[in-house]
Length: 166
Image 1 (tube, rainbow, N blue to C red):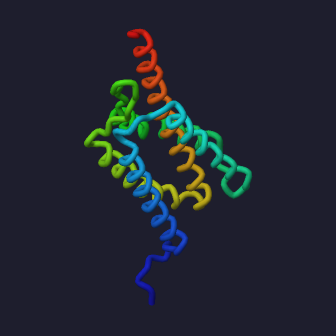
Image 2 (image 1 turned 180 degrees about the vertical axis):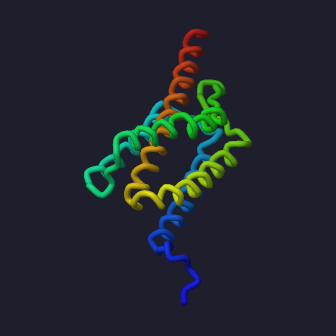
């Protein structure tokens, strides 16, 4: 007799563990990057690198309806990007631009991770694990892309202001 629910699988456990480890790693990296000089390259590279993940859709098992994908992207771009944009501030210090860390940033990232884990379990009851992973990738891409575009806009404004006051 097993104490685990019938719907539990070790793939599910592995998914939760990988998600938690990834979330902790991202949180740690974001905290280390804060209050350090940033560049155009440091802002643009993460979404470009992440975009290679769309190659997963070459595999048919990850295919989802277009409307689902667009909805996931829209949720990431609006609901999940907003707190990141609000807690990420670029500031000019001398000749460099730095990302100033908000005290709420760590709580926002942890909150987003918890919401993702809870929503993941709900979605996984309706569609397959690979499709769930694909939808959450699209959601995360929407979040990262919009967040980084907001940072890019602020970075360009700060650079433009510096040049105007020379």
